[in-house]
Length: 179
Image (cartoon, rainbow, N blue to C red; front, side, top):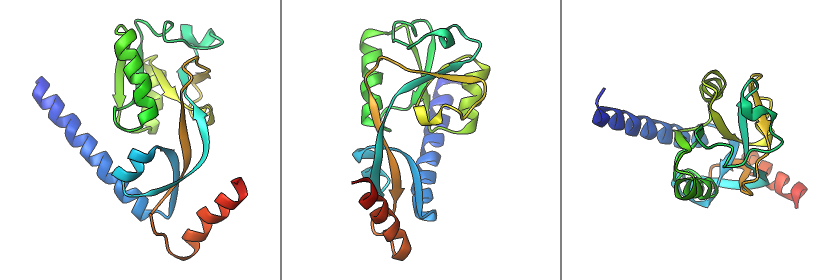
């Protein structure tokens, strides 16, 4: 496949995922995930932040990075790091910008979204994966290591902007509990 064909395939896949996310929010009453204000606007949904989750690094349990107390960007030199594509989340874009500017020997691998096959790929190919502490037990062959990146993301409820009935009550009830 030529570079142009590959790029076209990637763009089609990104468009499919974006449509799927838009449909997901409208096909389901409430979902939980990572978001920022740009994400909410792009996908025409509302969000309720439950917490800020620090970015972590999931690595193969057999890899050299698994023994570290914390993964630094220096540790990732000459490694591949999987993370969601630019524009998905502004906080993650900060990490991406830092890597492009200061660590050009870290190969970035763009993700469209976190799915089971992404965690499998990270484990099978010994790729580092930007992840969250709450996902630490998603895959038995990945170990989630703290980082020194000092970047966190919003994690919470996503729902249609004007939910009806009981759906509207749920985020309001959750909001009352956490405030």
